[in-house]
Length: 166
Image 1: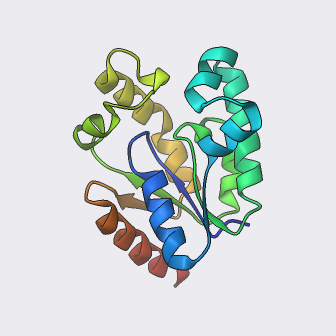
Image 2: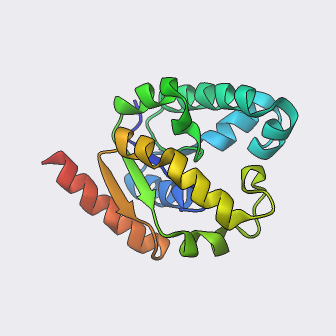
């Protein structure tokens, strides 16, 4: 069972925050995109383009399942919550939703390979938020403001975990 799982839209800082928390807790940080790449031999973007969205999501759930068996802080792919199987897995974990305004996310996404954002990242991000927001809420114990620096977000996560533990 993972120590903590982070969910949220692309660019919200899940991987960065997972790494910082894991370093301070003396455990591993796992990213389901990295797990997927190890399983498939391609990056998440390559697998999505090569295999299509349905196959990609199934591989993403397999990567999530593998990551959850580790003593780790797990950063998920932003769309993992779209599958009910993944949401069921996440309900049994301490899961936090990192979130911030689209105006903060857009600059963070400029240099990444994000096929689902296409040529109009702002519109695509708005659509992803509408589609996924309820699922993030469903699987998470708390919603964390990730609009600040990684250190500020890490502190907010720690504060939320203290509240969840009460």
